[in-house]
Amino acid sequence: MDFVADNLFNGRRIRALTIVDNFSRECLAITVGPRLKGMDVVETLNGIGRRERRVPGRIQVDNGSEFVSKDMDKWAYENEVVLDFSRPGKPTDNPFIESFNGSFRDECLNAHWFLSLEDAQEKIEQWRIDYNDLRQHSSLGNVPPNEFRKKLKQAEILEL
Image (spheres, rainbow, N blue to C red):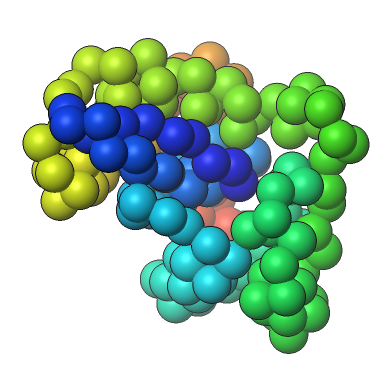
């Protein structure tokens, strides 16, 4: 989980909270807003939890104020989630999100002019869907994250 900053066409700043499952490489959410705080992170995680009907056991984060906030600490405690903080100045402690954010910047943020916050949200969500449904990953046997996840679910059903 990490943040990426960008601008609308008129120079207004926007931020994107990116959340990626390190195992399946699936992008679970990208929340976009002018300012995102700890409560926004919690709301995004709650939305993922409702949709997935589960929460992770551990989340890798940096030491940004949104991740060390009281809201985030409370959410992690209540959901029994370990927040694994990277060492200050060591982005290599969380290489999967750094790699994802590089692709996100190159393929989406740098490829579009965002006319409004809503336009940015729509274009970014479409890119996220394409990333999960179409982008093949060599680490997943050259299948997209959603296909990898379906194979895992089928394998679990067959093992029962």
